[in-house]
Amino acid sequence: MKRILVTGGAGFIGSHLCKRLVDEGNYVICLDSLFTGSLENIKNLMDKPNFKFLEQDIEDEIDFEVNQIYNLACPASPPHYQFNPVKTVRTSVVGIANMLDLAKKYNATILQASTSEVYGDPLEHPQRETYWGNVNPIGIRSCYDEGKRCAETLMMDYHRQYGADIKIIRIFNTYGPNMHPNDGRVVSNFIVQALKGEDITIYGKGSQTRSFCYVSDLVEGMIRMMNSKEFTGPVNLGNPNERTILNLAELIINKIGSDSNLVYKPLPNDDPVKRKPDISLAKEKLNWQPTVSIEEGLELTIEYFKNKLARGV
Ligand code: NAD
Ligand code: UDP
Image (tube, rainbow, N blue to C red; front, top):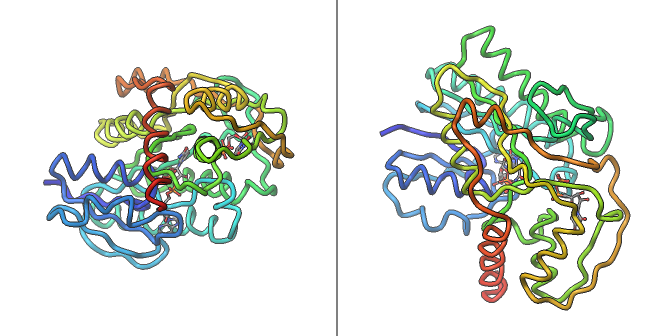
């Protein structure tokens, strides 16, 4: 039985990862400050003997033996990470240094949940891991982008300087059940708006693109990466199925059969114009690629939000 620490384990992706690791018979310690995560996301795990929840900040001292660390603690939606940008930088930078010290002390393997945001507003398309990115270091997204870039630097330096066993994944837009209904990300916003018959808020002209990955596909990739041999990454994990935001809105409206109207709002500063992962490296090294179509994934996510809204939670 492996002892696995998942930071940010009560969040959207973390809760799915914890469930999968618990179901596979590992002992899972979920550490979360509950800043954007919730106990609701992990309530089905709370009474399992191989699951333990710690309400704690990743910056605080942590000292217990683990074999693997998945570091996911960090708000991920633009409104949440811009709410307290100084804290966002600290969570990424001080947080990962703290986790790397723990990994070093107990010879644990550590996986960092990095992001496609390290590519910024990319000038290369689709994005490969070799691309260094086009990031504004002083803009409103920088607390997240530069925090994550610095975390990658610390991962590589602990690896080169101390021999730490590291894994870096760059996650592209992921969606699914357990997303926070008000966290401001596009999939949750559009589904909740469409279900309530409210206006669908398109930022800019809606011509910007993203490529959406269903959460179970991502979790499979994360676990494969953690257990890979002699491969540090970084590796892109995402679904290359690229679409415009306007197309996503139409898809969701049609699936729900909603009579919501589209309204156009200003495009936030530094919002990337296009994004699509090149996943050749993940295919080659991890034999991984997404299997869930956008139609299937949206249906599962819509069902989740329907139930949530019906229960008023
Ligand atoms: P989320 O906001 O649902 O989860 C983040 C979790 O981290 C929450 O439970 C939150 O309470 C916790 N947290 C935040 N600050 C903390 C701190 N200082 N100490 C302890 N816990 C803290 O977001 P998510 O979508 O599940 O993202 C998980 C990770 O994956 C994040 O690191 C994010 O940057 C990364 N990621 C996500 C996406 C995506 O599309 N969902 C894309 C790229 C990267
Ligand atoms: N977006 C939008 N309406 C919304 C929320 C987001 O048009 O209600 C756009 C946003 O401007 C961005 C894209 O959808 O271009 C994806 O936004 P999200 O916050 O989900 O992720 P990120 O920008 O971090 O990729």
